[in-house]
Image (cartoon, rainbow, N blue to C red; front, side, top):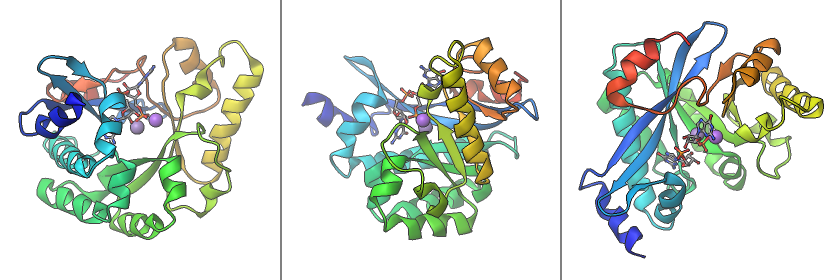
Length: 250
Ligand code: G
Ligand code: G
Ligand code: MN
Ligand code: NA
């Protein structure tokens, strides 16, 4: 496909950029972290979603190159922000995890940017964490450095819950599917509450993704829930607007 070969050149041509979506701590009433999200402005096709091009990149080692660029760019941007308490999360592709280069790439990005390891979160999907038994050592090494590991899109796969206990993880990002119908259906509310309880009982920070309405936010506050992300709180934003967005109390 044409898109695939264009993607290989997109980095060099400067067509890729990162936007950052805040994660809000409802207890502290402030932005505690931002998630870096890739954007590709194609010269003829316009904005192409990462949901389309990341899978294309996954078919080759290109995705590792992209991941390396994302790590360097995101850590540098956040280190330069002058907010020493703000963390940054990057999404890591399955193939990058499998490449055996993750540890080196993360170390290089931290060294180049000067960002403290404690301020970096790596987001991996459930399936990656489960399929790659051998990645556990590498993740454990990253955690010993101080980097935190998040399970992204938690609850969307068909995996058992037992794996949560054995994995070197720090954060659960509850998929936004769990918010569907919470406003109207008590059973959905019960399910959501149970997932939050499960995560926090295991000592994990739980981030609820995809909060879009004031009612959803109120329900989460009523549950005593702490970390939220979603269009209601903040859309993904350009790096130039980030200092302002991260300083704003929601
Ligand atoms: O930002 P958006 O909602 O369009 O992202 C769509 C999908 O692309 C999500 O699954 C998100 O995790 C993924 N994605 C966004 N940015 C990156 C990135 O830098 N690397 C990887 N591997 N996936 C990303
Ligand atoms: O898979 P991952 O969780 O990394 O995907 C992040 C994607 O979710 C981003 O592309 C982002 O644009 C999208 N997103 C973030 N907040 C919301 C929201 O409140 N509603 C919806 N529909 N999508 C969201
Ligand atoms: Mn994510
Ligand atoms: Na997610």
